[in-house]
Length: 180
Image (cartoon, rainbow, N blue to C red; front, side, top):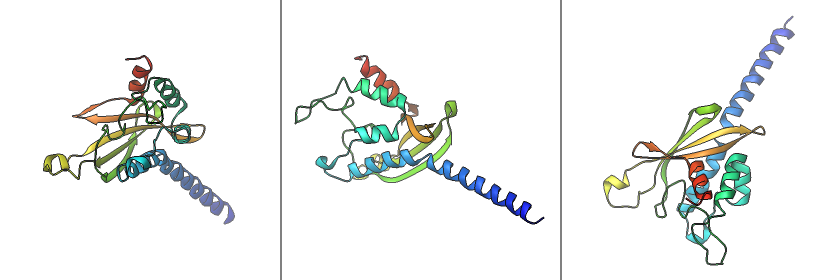
């Protein structure tokens, strides 16, 4: 008689553990993007790692996002020193800037998002090396729409928040692809 309740309890614990493990994994692609972004702002230009290089693009982003990026990349914002086209943006899409300081006080929270996505909110200070107190203490906010695709969490869109208004990197890529 004891084995049935014990088996049920073990089953419940195993089920809860796997549920929490899946929930924790939802921020993994965002953590990787933010780690790369943080490392980039802590290094010199030649050590810059691009979050849209083929490997991270395929690993961390949804198929829909990848397709939009590939189309936008046909319209590079600049040419590089080696004659190859640059990316379609010409700025760091996470910090929304070409300049900045090492990122500080990075925090991550999750909440239910739209259409079954998880909203992963990241805040950070990106201007801590500036002498102006108001700029130095300002906090940047970025939201990542994370969905499940092929059984793993991937980023489906990125929204930068400025003056209370949110944008969509996916929509920006669609505009770039149209030559706008």
